[in-house]
Image 1 (cartoon, rainbow, N blue to C red):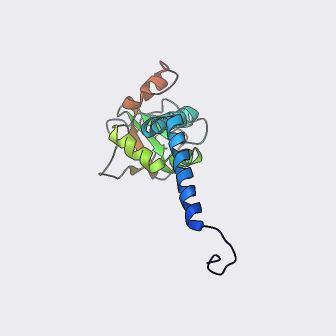
Image 2: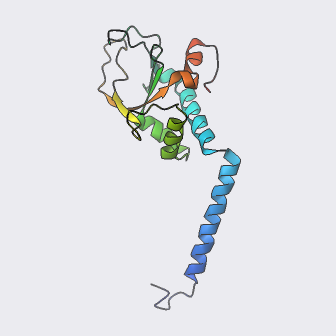
Image 3: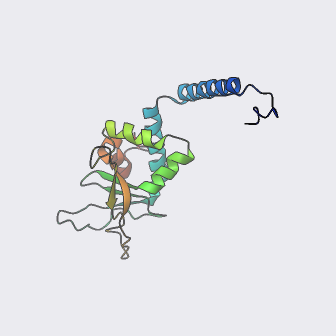
Length: 171
């Protein structure tokens, strides 16, 4: 508009094309330096788990559906729940999304890649979240309301090794 009025004499079409080319080049450089998107998704999830291992409630669901006594209580804000009997690793959706976003990792693409790799359990095709009460079974009458969560296959992630102490880091 300003160009039509004669206020500026810039070739906006050329500037736009150069900007698109520059952004594409930077994006390609970033992908080359950090690895594949699937690797980034796995590494970011592993980093989340490692940073929040003390914020996990570890409790078996129990055969009657009532949770048993906790194996591990969270020492901080409850962000994860692991059920050794079902191998479900349940992570609060908002916490995981925030973590990925802060690290500038494409969250939607990562979820899709982790589901395809059978790490993330889908409840319906393309639907990755479910509503769970991750505090159920914690001591002290902790009974938080249900919240939207992602459910991962803890066995596929190697989470039980972290819980048992036989490994320092999930795969």
